[in-house]
Amino acid sequence: MIEYPALKLFIDGTWRSGEGRAGETVLNPSTGGALGELPHASAADLDEALPSSARGFEQWRKMSAMERGAILQRAAALIMERKEAIASLITLELGKPIAESRAEVDTAAGIVVWNAEEGRRAYGRVIPSRNRGIQQVAIREPLGPIAAFAPWNAPAITPARKISSALAAGCSVIIKPAEETPATALAIAAALVDAGLPAGVLNVVFGNPALISKKLLSSPITRGLTFTGSTEIGKQLGALAVQTMKKMTLELGGHAPVLIFGDVDPEAAAISAVTAKFRNSGQVCTSPTRFFVHESIHDRFAAKLSELANAITVGDGFAATTKMGPLAHARRIDSIERFVEDARARKIAVSAGGERCGNQGFFYRPTVLSHVDDDCMASNVEPFGPLAATAPFRTMDDAIRLANRLPFGLASYVMTHDMRNAAAMTEAIQSGNVIVNHWQASLPETPFGGYKDSGVGSEGGIEGLQEFQTIKYVSQFAG
Ligand code: NAD
Image (tube, rainbow, N blue to C red; front, side):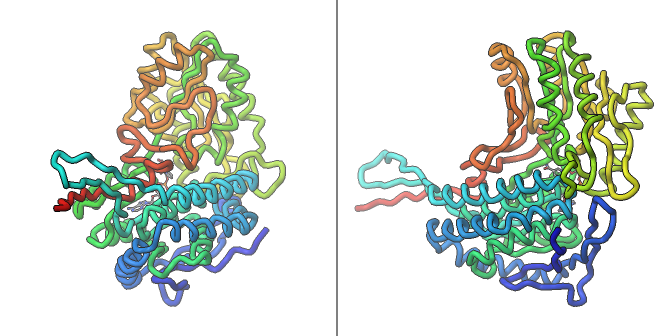
């Protein structure tokens, strides 16, 4: 295991440590013990970061997309060189099994590579003119300095995606990663800095989230907002950002439905679902959560899923036998306990888990609630933790109603061998991603975004890059 590093801010090209600043203690979720002290950015730090970001933008936008791409490529190579150290930081700060952390580092580097390559393809459009001698083009220009806010659940991937997409589009970034997982985000930032990023192109700050977001979003310097987190906070930040007409990407909550049709082997479906469900202790916005299973196979599916959930080894992410780590912080334990209490009060079967485990840290057993109704908490509120809810459906119309009845629409899953079911569901489900017969909801090259309260805009793919650009129309008369 590596030593936990001294935590810093990165402002205007220099690393800043505590030096009299306020701060907070970062906890190890596997022990509940302290990992380190995180300095908070002061108002003066933010006053320095904002104009620094404006200067960084002026320099960065004038570099060619190839030069920018070369720096991003070097950063991705450094992330891979430092893979083992960064993976250890993820497991220390978030608690997930080290194999999952290694896979996260691979994905983070893969996203940076994809953006490095794709940034050079910011093609515009030539629009045929109505009159001879007039040339008309629509070109893509970088938006400007971006205010980015990343949560703790994918502490390498989310900062890597937000920063590298914005940089590849030609923008500068001020990012506030999660205070729960700062060392991982700083390791991603360090790779970019060491790869040759000019001062001001990236600033990294931590502190009181509400104060930082208010300051960064009230400023006319930042021209774009990218946030990943809860719907409630996303709406607050969106309302702030619109005051200065910032373009925004909001990746918010989900509550992914899984529709399992009667032509599927229920035991095989449970075997594939259990890994997807309890990955990262279920703290994934695309985590499959509401399992609607055809009534002919529901009970067999629920029994197998519960059996498999009960067999999961929960423990410290560095232990070789661990299949699921702790939850990220004490708030998540409190939240999951409320779902289970609500289910018990309604006489809903808790067919796996339903309790904390271990005598330290934030561990909770993988939990399955079966035969949930429409009214219970698990059917309505995103658990964002190791909790699956199952319920039977009879007709295709029932399945569509259940899938679409919430204000969320991020990821959704369908399991069937019948193409007619698959076609009907991919058309009817109101969500940004519909995944049929597997669980891979996002890749560096694919767009990822939500319908309804799950968000605005896309991350990933060319769509994600274009969120950080704006269109300029140019018309020139040659004569
Ligand atoms: P939260 O909404 O309090 O925090 C989520 C993230 O937003 C954190 O990183 C936090 O620092 C940041 N944040 C909070 N208030 C902010 C503000 N005023 N300005 C800027 N940033 C702010 O939730 P939490 O308790 O940490 O996590 C639980 C909920 O968050 C879940 O229910 C889930 O919906 C949501 N969440 C979603 C994702 C996702 O990938 N979409 C990731 C993490 C959390």
